[in-house]
Structure formats: structure tokens, C-alpha cells
Length: 622
Image 1 (spheres, rainbow, N blue to C red):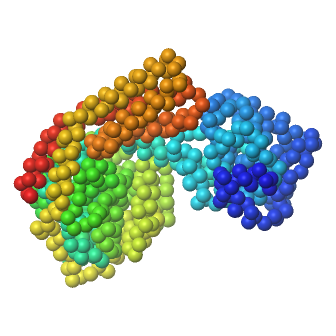
Image 2 (cartoon, rainbow, N blue to C red):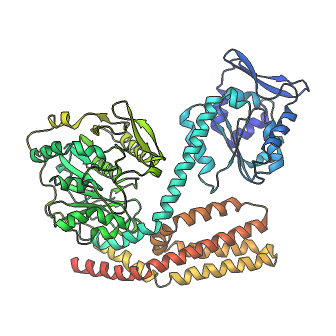
């Protein structure tokens, strides 16, 4: 390997240098001369010698690759090169397009070592824009490489595949592209979810906060020995639930396991005369209140409601039974204003695509064992979404023709095929991630004709019922428990919030004025003053961001806007183009100021109102 390349790798990718130093020369990869005297790489694969670049004129071939991609690639946009080779195509494309940064993917350490023995990275001026050099030798290394290249930018980089790699490394390229597309799809889904719920989460948390002071925390205020090593049945609303009502009735009568419903399953259970030991809910939307409409209308008081702190606040109104809560990861208000008297930290439930996944997390924390999944289809049966007894005006219980177009088959619990869609598959993947981290727990998937769930054991509920304890081990779990939060801490934090809310508008306006001053200075081309103005802007932004009101409300209500703006600003932070940098800073801070002002208008009066209620409750209880 060339000395300059060793120095470069030691600075930029020491792990790769160590790997290349450990590579044994198998003789399958080597450099040979093309007809025009340039070097090309030769790789032995399946007994055949394959060339990475042209055997006649590698430089001309690279120019042709650039010409073919001319209409597809944009100038001054990031690029990921799949395949290093000897870098001819990288030279041609980087020279022409001037990407702000680029990354390179290589699959073979032997190829990379051979390349770096003839290709001097430091002599290419554009290689200062190299963001990452990835050596991907196995599937586990794909996602970390993608995250490093994609996570801190708003627009995905352009992909350039060295044509010979589509033949020589066909499977490796396909796996990388599949992972890349899947990650982009998941990233888009997260963006959509954040954009849709970012304001709703904090509004719910604000409205629900007084209820947290009146209801116990399931993960903090209950005796966990009530649940430890006790069987728990997690009942979801899938169509397979229809076949399990008799078995659930027997479990309830025998008191052989806790029965916990999630989401809409409560209605199917009530319809069949089964009252679960608790109903879990966390959906932040206003529609969630309709899940419990039947229970409220019937005045059923025997079913405790366990709610996530950022659940749709309408759900809690007029609930006739007892209530307990858990803190969700989207509840920034509780994160900053709640402290327990006896526990150093309060367990939280990580936000997930479904209440079943969140409840599974909670049952794991409570050390329930075994856990039985019922009605967890992650699929459709005869076009049905739900079990019988579940009907809503806002959603049809049966798939329409257009929805059917988005379905596809996946493996079922019995090795056959069931019909599912992308949303269910994302939920299943999320549940499998939680299951993988559950240590010492046995989880049975009893869902007939449901999608196969990794890290579970498929058993029919009828066979498991006979194996459950017969001595009535399930006891009344919710008696006179009360919340045990530190009221003095809560009072201190809320007084700060109410006080700060009086000056937040002024702080935001100062940032707006400073942004306007930067724009004016930029228009006058007084570029020598820009760095001083950036420092002043940063000071005012820090002044806002150090407040509790920002940390709790403004930041959480503008997550999407903040992420977009921060990535755009970071992209030009070290730019030599002073005009572009200034224009970007003005544009993005103007966007943020508008978002902060809108968010504060939404919660300003509620902060005052709820703050008054909280402080009054604290003084009353204290």
C-alpha cells in the first residue's frame, strides 16, 4: 500500500487500515496493464478472471460512464460510489459534478488493498470531500454505513454503481441497495410520523399532566411481585381473536393469567362478556376516544385503563373506571418536570408503531412470564382488519379495493402465506426488535393464520390453557395505589415554566431581528461582519434554547422543522461560499422562528391554565 494512503487511512479510517494489514494475499486479485498502459484490476471469481475496468482504455471508459449518467446526476449534490475499483470513475464524476462530499463503498478488502497500492488518494484534490470510506464484508455492516451517509442529510445522496460491480459483486450490491431503499423508506415514515404528531404529543402531555398527579404510575407505584413470573395474555384486535373467546373466558375464570387488552381489542372482549384485567392505550389521535366509547356508554367500572402519558387527552375524559399511567418517550413535559420520591429514574416506554409493542415492553419490565400473544395477526383474514365486535365510523373493518392493491404475502405462523401490508410489516419488525432484547422471557404467539413473528414460539392457545397454573395465581392488582411523585420538584419546575412563558415571545422576536440584520448585511456584501453576527445569533438562540419552555414545548413541537434546518445549516457551516452560507442561515432560521412562534401561540394559554391547575393540585396534596 502507498505510504500516503496509509497516512490517509490512519487519519480517516484506522479500522479499515487494521483490516487491510491483516488481509492475506490469496492471489485472486491483482493489477494488470490495459492496452493503453493504464492499470486495471483483475479479479478471479468462480474460476474466471474478471476485469474491474476496461482492458483497453480505463480512462475513456470512465468518461463514457460519466456521459451515460449526465442526465441522471446533479451537480454539487452528494454521491455514494458503490465500488472503488481503481477510482477512474470517481475521478471523472467528482471532477465534473463537484459534489460537496462523497462516500465510497467497497466489498472486498483484497480489492481495496490492491487499489490503494496504485491509486494515490492524497494526489486527488477532490478527495478532501471524502466523507466515509466503507468496507462492507457482511450484512451487519450495511446499516451502520448507510446511517453514517444518510442520517445527517435531508436529501438522499446520489448513487453511482461501478458497472463491473453489478456483475462481479452482484449479491453484495443488491443487498446494499435493498438496505439503502429500506432505510430511506423507514426514515420517510419517521418523518411523516413526527410531522403528523409532533404538536399533538406535547398538547396531549400538557392536557394529561394533571391526571398524572392523580393516578399511579404502573412502572413505579405498584408492587412488581404481583406480576413477576406470572403469565400474561396480551390480547390484540386481529381477526384471529374470534377463535379464542372461549379460551380467554376459561383463563379469566381460572385466574391462571392476567389478560391485558390493547387498543380496539377491548370492544371485542366486552362484546363477548370478557372483562380484561386492564386495557392499555397510547394512541395520540383524537379518534382514540372512540375506542372506549362503548365502555363509557355501558358505564363499566371494573376495567382499569392504563394510559400512556401522551395519549389523546379526550380518551381520559369521563373514564368510569380506575386509571394508571406510564410515561412515554414522546412526553418531554414529564421528562423535565416529574421526579419520583423513591426511584432515581422513572421507567419510560419507547414510542412504537402500535400499543401492542409498547405493552410488550411494559410486561417485560414487570417481569411477566410467559407472555401469550393473542389476535396479533399483523395480517388480514378474508379482508378483515379486526375481530368481530369492533366497528368504527372512521375506518371500515374490511379492506377496500384500493387498499388491496397495497397488500402482499408474507410467511404465516404455520409456514403458509398470509396477506399483509407495509404498515403491518413495520409493526412486526418493531415488535421483533423488542422481543430480541427480552432476556429470560418465553413469548408464545398463539395467533392462528397470523404472520410469523421472530423470537416467539407458535402454539395454539387451546394447548397452552391446560398448561397454565390452576391455583388462581392472578390476584387483584389495582387496589389503593397512589402516585408518589416529588411535589416540591414539580412545583419548582412549573413555576419556572409559567414565569418563562411571559418572556418567550420576546426572545423569539430578538432572533427574528438578528436574522433580518444578517440578511441586510449579506445584501450589502459586508461579508467581513458575518462571523460576528453569526456569534450574536448563536448567543440569542442559546438563550432561547436554555429555557424549559423551549426544551419541553418548542423543541418537541418543531422536531421536523428543527431537524431539517439543523442539517441544512450544518451542511454549510464550513463552506467557503460566504454568500450561500449566509443565505442558508437566514432561510433556515426564518423557518425556525416561524415554527417557534406558531408552536408557542398554540400552547401559551394552556401553559397558564394547566400551570395554575398543577400548582393548585400540588399545594392541595402537599
